[in-house]
Amino acid sequence: MAKATTDGFRPHRVVVLALDGLLPFELGIPHRIFGRPRDTEGRLLYEVVTCSVRPPGPVDTDADFAIHVPNGPEALATADTVIVPASYELGPVFEQGVLTPELTAALAHIRPGTRLASICTGVYVLAAAGLLDGRPATTHWADAERFQELFPQIEVDADVLFIDDGDVLTSAGVAAGIDLCLHMVRRDHGTAVANDVARRTVVPPHRDGGQAQYIHRPVPDPQVATTTAARTWALARLHEPLQLRDMAEQEAMSVRTFTRRFREEVGISPGQWLTQQRVERARHLLESTDLSMDQVATNAGFGTAQSMRQHLQTALGVTPTGYRRTFRTGATGATGATGTVNALGALTALN
Image (cartoon, rainbow, N blue to C red; front, side, top):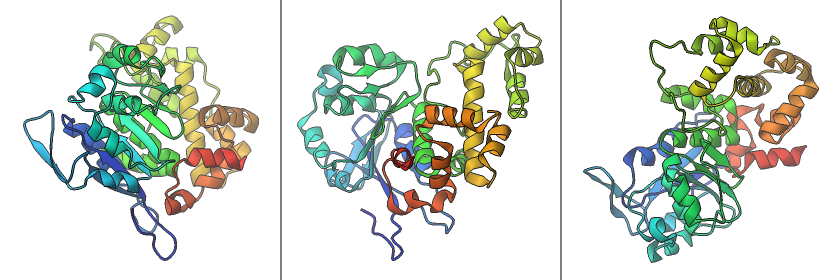
């Protein structure tokens, strides 16, 4: 575990469990996302290490190369967060939902209260360990039906990018792992820090976990009009009272056609998307400005502070005041100094 500095600062330690048959891309996601955030003094907010279920040495991948993992399972005992990426060689875990002796021994090192997360089929490991019983979880849509049959005690939702259930988080495949890791950075340190990481990684700063993971038309036919212009137009006018017909008019479509096309492209309804964008705008203003609650609500398009409070409470489980109190100082706040596992849980306690 990383040592604290004289002022009490200690980076949050993320330990990534590398299993045989892993996907190199997914193994790299936590290192890319958590390896970037820094506080205002330039100190890394996270420390990321990789371990395997065996002593240090090679771990096979699904590609034509192996990787050398420098840490054994004992590293799991030092984690504030453990992430299990996907693997194509889970054996009994994937076939019968039963842990191997190696995995059982490795997972026993994890301390109570450690935040757990999985990317794609890594969820099978958490499920086989009984860590998801009675909880909601997701995985890649192509594996969801089989996963539900193997673990009927888990509430599987195959229609979302990721699920945050407090101390256990699960995501769909590949790119959804990026969304999940950015979400955890946002949860720990706020939108400004997460958005900076997203910009450096050249990915969208925010895709809500409830967004559909499988969109029937991910790349629209070039002969068919899209809703891109309407979204760009709306983002520049979030502070205004926007109507669905206003957005549809930007694409010269009927409301019905626009709504259908929007859902096909984005995975959620225009109304849900607008609310998400306004919540993100409010979060940014609460973190980065001293505007009053009424001013933030107006600029974010919620109209009143009460309306903003209701939307943030629904989306984040926290009031605007509580959110600002925790994240107004950005990466220098308490979560960066202590490696807090559940910042939003702390937020709720503040209200």
